[in-house]
Length: 302
Image (tube, rainbow, N blue to C red):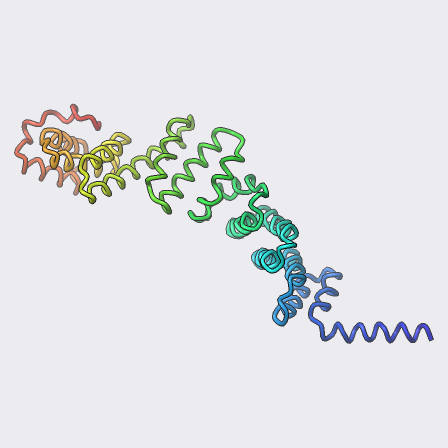
């Protein structure tokens, strides 16, 4: 009699599970059939997006290697049930660790951003350093991650490298007004030649951009200062030579044709003929100072 009752119980349980995707998922998960479990949990969520099932789907997706889906499930869990934010944060951190091992920068960034969103007090600096140093991380992600990465970095060279990366990310998102401050900081701090070279380029590019913006606003005095800074970084590069041309134009509009001629003559003398040199030569000719501006070696931008 007892054996018959037990058989009926198991039969009923099996019938219930057969029509219950969540219970089917639980059975598959308990047998380490994670991909099947995830499939069943998806079905359960389609009919009833319960936080309990989001947690199960996140775990099954993580074990199945579906890292992006795991991260999304844990974010849904945190959003639907604020009392389980800690559980969701632990799940997202597991996604971050797995993405780090797999060198999956895209998912690492997404999961890390989600972790910071739901648990801003949770330490994530170490992961941010790793992500910032991987190729393929977007500029907007870097702007969000790099302050924490810089704070977590333990040696000066890494800090300098991250500061330069932060500058580039800001240049591409918020603009040069903030970025140039970071590039200048790297120039003051860094001993590594590669870091200094990148910062030099950053200062030159941003100074040129800020000079062009000031020129467009009709502020020739400010434009001349920015162009001069860009040219001082390296007057032989394309950026520096464009800045030197802009500097000459700004000084000319300020009523200083001699300073303008010196800048134009430096451009003509320092490079193979190209469009920038041709523009400088045309300006010299229009000034009729090509023979009296002095030798280009007297320019401050060599």
